[in-house]
Image (cartoon, rainbow, N blue to C red; front, top):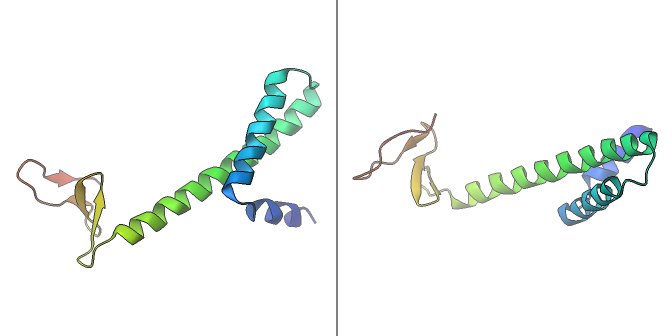
Length: 99
């Protein structure tokens, strides 16, 4: 019964979830809610925050996959990283491991 409500929130687009989170934050900052209602809205806000965070992490993973070259090296901020080993691709000035 409650899973349907949770599933519906997971289907929200990132922008809608962020908008809901901003509205909840404004309500809480307004100081007009009672304690019980504030706790309820805070809990709901946490759910939207986690949803947004998850969607951002998913987008980041997709970007990394799209940037991955055929040789298994991922380009990140101008530094090439060997995917399997987590090592920085050899360069004159940069060597090491990210793990």
